[in-house]
Length: 269
Picture 1 (cartoon, helix red, strand yellow):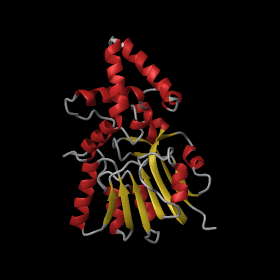
Picture 2 (spheres, rainbow, N blue to C red; picture 1 turned 180 degrees about the vertical axis):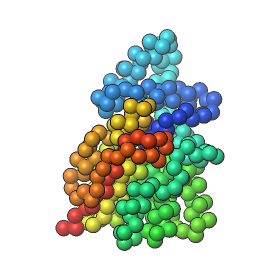
Picture 3 (spheres, rainbow, N blue to C red; picture 1 turned 90 degrees about the horizontal axis):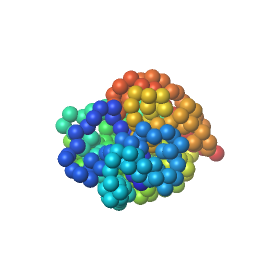
Picture 4 (cartoon, one colour; picture 1 turned 90 degrees about the vertical axis):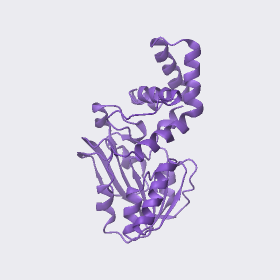
């Protein structure tokens, strides 16, 4: 049940969701999970389920209702997570930075364009910028309505994007395939080895996410939260170009919090 909520950040404001029972059930679990200690978030699924069952029992739910809610999270969690991101990423008044990520812009502007991959591309803010700079861009995301926005904007801007509606579990990263892989508020812990293998020699990975300190202001999706110095250790085969943990305005939540920024290159030999 844990894997369905690893995708990316939770904004620090309440987002309006449809009055759908399943969605409400999922949001309840998601909120609870993201407030749990790290050892619980990264622990066995069976332990997470046991703790959540106990939590629901404390809230006064009957055993039958607890079974129903846990079944909903287990069986429909992925679909409900995709739906929540469809809503967030296609909102009429977005509550996230719709411009390209500033760290990406800084790290990529001096590099020769090649083949770029935008992991969890959302509505395409970063993929479109890369394409405008001359990169051959592929992006993927399971949120199909967000990807549709990216495709439409690519047509308006006259740039080419290759897009796939998939999660990282289903996307074929390949080997020695990409000159740039972007991980912008989508994590990286779960597919660190895949990313290293998929980079071409001389290619770079560019990552921005939340630092653990940011969770002091409210719950954030655990997949996009990293501890001090954790990110460079995830990619031992890469040469760090830059790593920092500044206090800055986050792309999601758009509040002043501590973030992590990492750019590293795959050695050419």
